[in-house]
Amino acid sequence: MNHQAFPDTGFVRLAQILAPKGPIPVSKSTWWAGIKEGRFPKPQKLGPRTTVWKVEDIRALFEGDQDA
Image 1 (tube, rainbow, N blue to C red):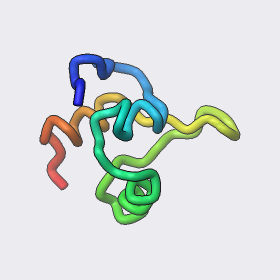
Image 2: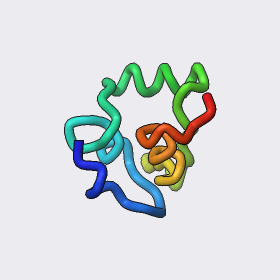
Image 3: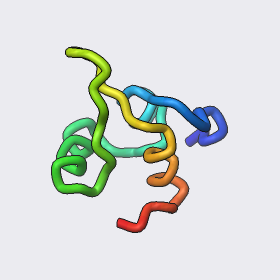
């Protein structure tokens, strides 16, 4: 995983979060189930077909800063 390439601030799309391009090694179905269960951060909708997550929330997951 290349954490250095992950942005420091802003928003990211799902393809930037999940492996192989992103730092989180889970499938899409596992990711969405984790959101429903509260294990992963909730997304924000920017438009009808645009879903994003805060970079800070995703970094907290793979850097181990999340309390959950």
